[in-house]
Length: 257
Ligand SMILES: [Zn+2]
Ligand SMILES: [Zn+2]
Image (cartoon, rainbow, N blue to C red; front, top):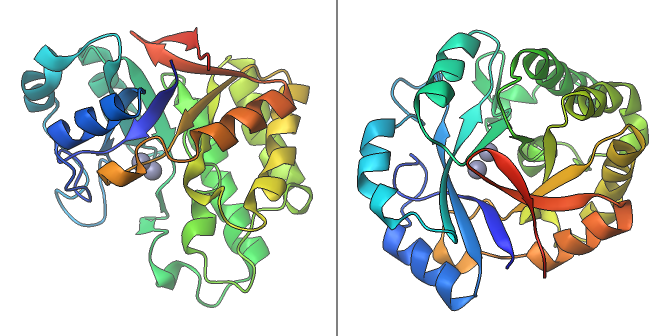
């Protein structure tokens, strides 16, 4: 069974997809699903992008099954590592994604993050926060959407080209490989004309540096997007010699078609 390992329902500040809609969409498409709600502690807007984890398990726990697992997407920052570590330690998550959404206290979704600086400067800063966080976030299972910044960057060509940022990306990938953590192939941008080709060398390099596992997720915030692009991501994993997995009770399980 294929698994969509990255989805958001109403416990995520930016999603209105109900649990029932997510569950139904996964069932109709014959997919397993992991719900990974947003937890961005110290988010610049108070209370946004956090949720009550006890309420989450109380609401969804009874529906957990081999095909429906409960995870979390942690927004990594270097000023709340211990608080995030405690959240993960205290709750029985199946899967923990670590993502960079905020750099220097600005959500990189915001246009102001890009004003007055070059793409080189901004992307270097983005990777630098990722590296600093990954050194400390030894309790995440998979690094979410390494290409997140390309969704919002206000440059003529926001695409992430491995050879432009190899020094930074190598540090990210070797840190993950060293701890046998996974990297995600986030399918959101794979339909864009150049993105799949541009991202392939990143995943090839992960394998070269000793990485083994990829998780595959749509980052769906709507039922229609659940499972979208998983086939493209499976092809990418195979091309790069990486093993696609999902996590149950924090352990990787190989995905099969
Ligand atoms: Zn994210
Ligand atoms: Zn997400």
